[in-house]
Every structure is written in structure tokens, then in C-alpha cells.
Image 1 (cartoon, rainbow, N blue to C red):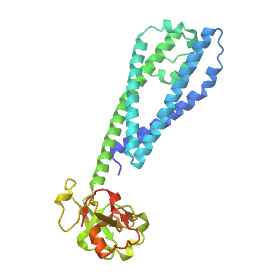
Image 2 (image 1 turned 90 degrees about the horizontal axis):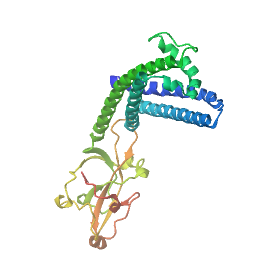
Image 3 (image 1 turned 180 degrees about the horizontal axis):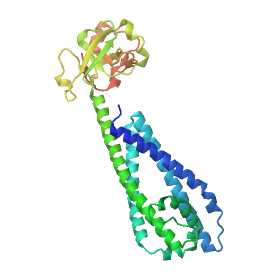
Length: 323
């Protein structure tokens, strides 16, 4: 059953994506109105161009917000912490930006609107303000009609913007805290799953090559996907335990050779695979047992033949795995 934080994260990401997409479409639909404006002078043309640039920037902002919201929704739905972290960081920055706009709206609501109404380019936006603010102005007073003064229209619009931005900031803050809590839970779960089963692994080994004693066998990581299907018929099941990372080759058992071959040693590695933790899951090849034989001993007894899939253990580094 999903937690409250996950449910809230799903709601806020999906709602953010849908709302921002709707606003982007509405803004794109009103673009034709701005393009149809005719300037009577060069100054008016410059002002209208600036208004169009602001309109385009607002559209890009809403489109980016919709994209990030859908990315966050996918991350919450599919348990991807990186996607949720991207949404959390972008939403945090956007929340601060919204709070800054709220402060500007508060200042605009207290400032006289006469100076703003003297700007002729604002008259083209009054019809847009009328059509979009009347549904909200009923909570604060009488709706604005087109024949009312510009001052009253802007005062009502500032009040609506202020109230809406304050409510939106508070709601988004609570949902953002829920997203942060869910992201922290996802990170903890990922770290817990990554730490389970790291010390002991159930594996299956191929038979050792001819002429190799069990005391010469060490373990080194080798990726052998081609041997995955052929191992199960002739292999033997064993358990391996990882030694401490700080244990050097000097503290290794005298019955085993060093993991790092010396210049007078050769190393070979027949493959083995890690058994799946759950029944029905695919076999994942991960490591291979390696044995080390000195060159002098090999010259006396003859070279040990390489079976199929044997690899040079010098390419596998110094990972310490012991039976």
C-alpha cells in the first residue's frame, strides 16, 4: 500500500503537469491576439515586441514546469530517485520564484494604479483580465465590467493575484515537503537493498582445470555472460564470503596465493555465476574463481591447458573473494 508521502507526491506531480500543460495551451491560443496588434509608432512597436517576448518567456516557463512535473510523476511511479530529485530541486527553485512574485503582487496591490493605467499598451490586456478574473472576483466584490475604470480593474486583478499566489505558495510548500520525505524514503530503501547480501553469495563453480590444486584457488571478478547457460549442468554449488576491504595480501592464508600476481606468476580464471536470490529470476554472471601458478612450476610440470572461458586474472583487479 503506498504511503501518504508517495500518494501526495503522485498527486502534486500529476497535477503540476496537467495544470501547466493547460496553461501553456491557453497561452499559445492567445498568441494570435498579440501578433495582431498594430503599432502606430516605433515606440509602440518596441513596447509590443517586449510584451511578446515576455509572453513567450512565460510560455517556455510553463512548458518547462509541465515537463519537470511529468518527469517527477514518472520517477515516483517507477521508483526512480534521480527523477524525483530533479523534480524536488526544480520545484524548490520554482517555489522561491513564486514567493518572490507574491511579494511583487503585494507591493503592486498597495501601489496606486493610475500611473500604470497611463501606459497605452496595457489597454490591450484589459479584456484578457476581464475574462479571466471575473470568476474569482466574486469572492472579493463585484465582478469587473469592461466599461469600468482601469484603476479599479488593476486593483481587483492585484488582489486576485495576491490571494492566489499566497494560497498556491502554502499548498505547494506542503506538497514539496511530502515529495522530499518520499525521496528520502526511496534513498534509504535503495541503500538498504544495496547492502543486503553483499557479504555472502551463493554461487556455482565450474570444475577446476587439470593439474590445479584447491589450495591455489582464489576469487576475482570476471564478467562471463557466455558461460551462464553452460554452468548449471557441470557446476557445484558453494558459498563465498567477501573478506574485509582493509585486509591486504600479507594477511592472506598461507594455503592460498596472492590476489595480485607477481611477475613470475600466471593467473587463469574459469567462470562461475551468482545464483538468483529469488526463484524464477535470471542467472546473472558476476565473478570467476582464479588460480595462480608460478612460472617455474609451470615449466617443470608443463603448461596447464586453458578450458573454455578461461580469462587472464590480471585484468580483474584486486577484489578479495574467498571460499
